[in-house]
Length: 291
Image (tube, rainbow, N blue to C red; front, side, top):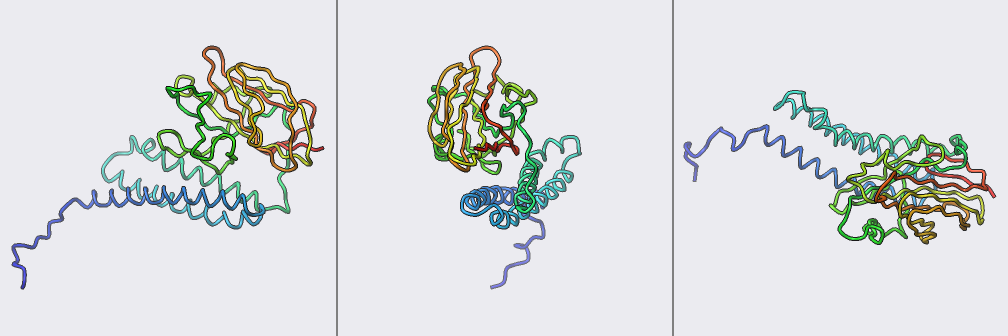
């Protein structure tokens, strides 16, 4: 049975621009999920392979993500300019630029890690204080932040091993990469320089201490607010507003240091950490100690 001509129409059911927009939004959602899967794969490669083998496995993932997000950025700009002027384009495309910047930095780190026959030059840590950290920040909760484990979705404070390509989940479900912070002050880190005091209640900072052998070394930790020091999954100190000098046991290889900082009720927000008796060299957030 043939349809009558009056049942057919050349008029689209919806505007082509709307259709293109929803195709873009579906693609953006799809690749946001695939990016998280890629991060999980990268973390797995890091844990199971040598640095050179891991670099070979991770490199194509980074290149693929860069290609995808640059393509989505081009599509977004085209769709935006079809409907709007350029006045707000820079702000509107910022989330896409952030993803491109993230994968670009990761790709650069992978290229660096892949050249094991040409190791990067290490630099001495200024006056032995640790000034380069990875960080994660969280908003205030109704419960006691000191006892709340914000990192529970990633295995918890005692199990997490932060890295520059790792991520964490905020209570609202948003995924965030660990953010690098570099102090310009050689003997302390002013957290208020990196985080808004009125919106952030708790900050984690993390680094790796790479020891040439098993050893026991003194450490000095100063904090203006309530803090927790965790090394290799063990709570070393947990005090409010402290200056603590103690001895810590390092194992040969990587040691994961995690500091939890609660915002003080008044005054500046800062901390400092060092190994006062050791000659320390560092490459970004990795600090090297020789026996």
